[in-house]
Structure formats: C-alpha cells, structure tokens
Length: 392
Image 1 (cartoon, rainbow, N blue to C red):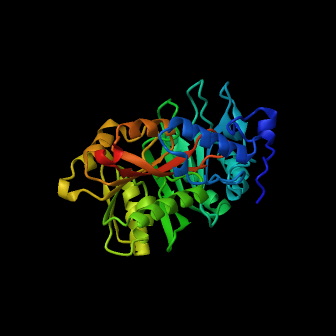
Image 2 (image 1 turned 120 degrees about the vertical axis):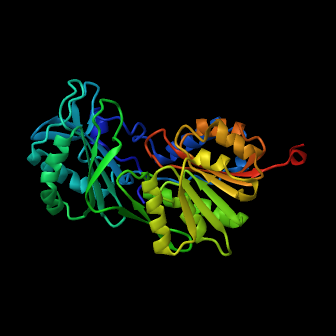
Image 3 (image 1 turned 90 degrees about the horizontal axis):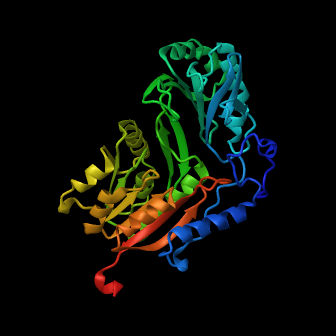
C-alpha cells in the first residue's frame, strides 16, 4: 500500500486547505495525533495504548459534502472561499473513487436543471449543497439541499434524468434548509427514490449491513469505522458481560457488532434519539438474525431513568463532539456499572468526562485515524471500575 503523501493540485494552488496536513507523511500525522491524545489524556499509562489504526492517504472518505457555487448553468461543486465564491473540487483525492467518478455527472445534471446556486452574501438562490455517500459496492445516496419548495420541484422534475445518469444511486432525496445559517442540512427530508443505502461491514464473526437513511449518521471512513466496531466487540467479548447498553447508538454499529460476537445469552440494547436511525438498526438486526434490541429515546434521559435492577453490566457511549456531559457521566460514576467503552471524536471533551468518572480507570485505549490529513481523530477507551481499596 502506497502511504506516501499524495500531490493535491488544489492544495498546491492554495484554493483548498481543508486537508491541512496532506503534505505530511501519514506516519508523522499519526505520531502527532497520538502525542495530542497523550497530552489531553495524561492519566492513561503508555502501556495502555494499543497501536493506532491508520485511515489511508487517498480515496478513503465515503461521504462528500459539496457546497454549490457559481451560477445557474455553470455551477461549482466543492467549497466556498472566504468571499463566498465557489471552488470546484471535482477531483478531490480524499473522496472514494466512485464519488470522484460521478461528480462531473452531478455537475452536468445541476447545470441542465437550471437551478440557481444559493448565494450566501445576497441570501438568494436555491441549491446549497449536494451530499453524496458511497458504500463498498459503489452504490450511492445522493441528497440535494435546497432552500424552498421551488427548489424541491426543480429536482423532482429532473428525477428520471438523475436516475438514468446515476443508475447506482439507490437513494435520491431533497433536504429543505430555508434558514440562512451555517449548517449542512435542515430538518425536513423528502425522499424521491429508494429508502436506505446498505453499508456492508466485516465483523469478527459475520458480515453486518447497516442501513443508512438520508439523515442517518455514519462514520466518514468505512475501513476505520469497521476497525473501531471490531475493537469494541473484542473488548466486550473479553469481558463477556451479560448485558450491554449502547447509548447514542445511531444506526446500531456498536450494538450489532457486540451482539453478533456473543456466545451466550448476552442482552444488547441500543438507544438513539433518531427514530429513523432506530428503524434502520432494527432492520439490520432482523436481516442478520442478531439478537439486539433498539429503542428511540434521549440517551441521558433513558439511562438516568433505569431502575437499579435494570442496570447493564457494560455501557458503550459514542456521543457527539460535546461529550456525554455532567449528568450522564455522574450517573455512570454513581452506578454499579463495571465497564464502559467510550468512543470519542474529541479528546478534550473525553478528558472532561473522564474527570467526572474518577472510579473508572482506562484499561486500554486506541487512536483511530478517521480523518487523515486533518487534526481530527477518533479515540476509543475501555474503562474499568476500580474500588477505593484498589486505588489506595
């Protein structure tokens, strides 16, 4: 495998600096990220760190979030510069090959539709983003983010042409974002074709398919996400708890991998606030014959409402960047739960949450380079409860 720094024409020309460290060897990037984890998490002994998992150097990103610029009939798909002008990134090296191959087609379809790109400074126009997600079979989910019903109508009228030009697009949808604010999508989604994109992952004991609906969250690097889920599964199998509670479970990755490796009567329950994600998780479990259950609820509210006899033996948390917060961390600290697996995309919030759970010590930790060429990372830790007598 070629791990040498790729040459990026966009970076060299100074038109895109999103991949801040693309000219740095990937080994040096991993060393720097490991050092940053050690700095934020000084309480973790060096021997607890497992070797980091690399994320590749090119064609690793399974999702493209393409901002639309330019003008009707001559659009750009990529990013917006500081003056809010469009910068076309059709040949972005970090996107999976199938995404790069269809980006010119998408641009042609948008141009042919006559839809006007949304102009941020003037607060007018229609099309804001085109989101593309790919699975390992080169199937796609394509989402158009527009401002109004007019934009929705324009995309609807192009649906047959989109399907003909992109036969591997198994899901096509339109998201409505009427507000002028710095977010990637709005709350309302209108699905025009298909239902979910099947993300096939290789578990330790069986292949597991996660079904992504248009507003579902999934890690942007399929290879590293698989390694992360397998690591959690290995930790759980080693501990062999009778019950596992997966909070912030999303479409069920951790719960499904954990339940698929069970050899006995392990009870696994995933909790996620998104009802769409829970529907997807239930579908995956049913199709694979995995005995995991899923429930739509706020993670913290669900956990703190559990009676003592309902307490799981092991908890998995995979929160957003802000972390699990004081209430949930306090609940875990006061509970009889003996083990916790915490997956974090922000070592700073992880460090804060660990301070709130002093009875739980890090048994093992691992860095997952989910976002090569950037300063972002994923880190997972296995926590074990230590009694006051053991600490002394």
